[in-house]
Length: 191
Image: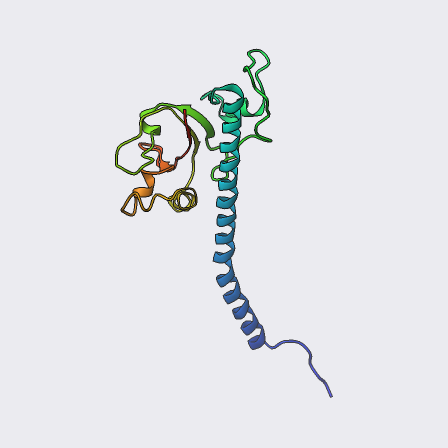
């Protein structure tokens, strides 16, 4: 007797169909888990930077400044004291490493001390910008879905504002206007 071993064509097609279904179901869940992990990691880093800024202020009596032309190393004062022009009271480093932008390779990210009008926040949700000098984190390349999730984690501004896009304007997390529609600002402190 001649017995054949192996799979028939129909069995192979059936197995491949089951595998295709499993892959099509699992792929979105994998990408969603990766996005969630990236956002969670980013929020944790924001909290670390906020603590570092507070410690810097406590030691020096000032907030870290920002050098706009130095986008690759924008948080120098949180990492090391300037040897040529030392900051009085500096007792860092306040961060272990440079702040990252997980949303855009080479995209802008930085801790800024600013009083620019487009960087002001409506923290109480009354519709008026709270005009003062603020310390913010700015990151570029953040999609609306990612930005909304970050706002939901860091902000509890739903009770203060209404409308589907209100999170973009009020609270601690907002969009930078104009041409920077993918830039996200996160309030850290008032100066």
